[in-house]
Image (cartoon, rainbow, N blue to C red; front, side):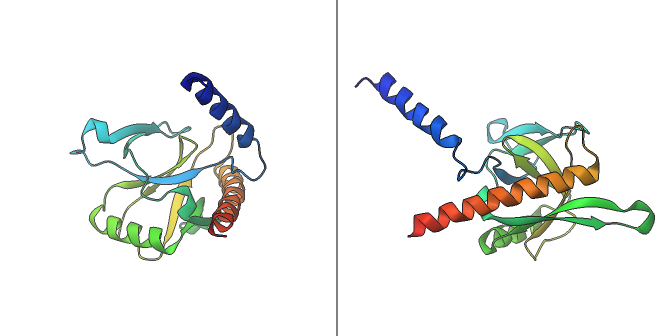
Length: 171
């Protein structure tokens, strides 16, 4: 079999498998804002969908999808300025990575990216020691509250599917 036919067959199998209900459709990862000294080959620009803020991020995620345990909508802020945010809970390894990174990255941002689209932003104001990240999220056509609820629901479904896949691989 020629390499082209083999590659085409493999691609068809992958595409057929992507429609499986056990494969997560939303892959979320957390990236970090690139430092100004990072070379252009090590970073990429991402743009938030509503505010259109462009942020250069490192080419690899600090927290890959399989290290996100779950999400939860929360409301925070002063009484007259309350806003909804997405709380993202990390596993122990990711929490340690975030703790170590955030100590040196005060003033930069974490960026929540779902399927290659930036959807959330979190400023790093202090070292994060508890493995909980709080993102302001955006989605065109939805209010802040609706975007948080929608994203939380979808990411929790994907996190559960990823955990099931990981458990099946361990067996």
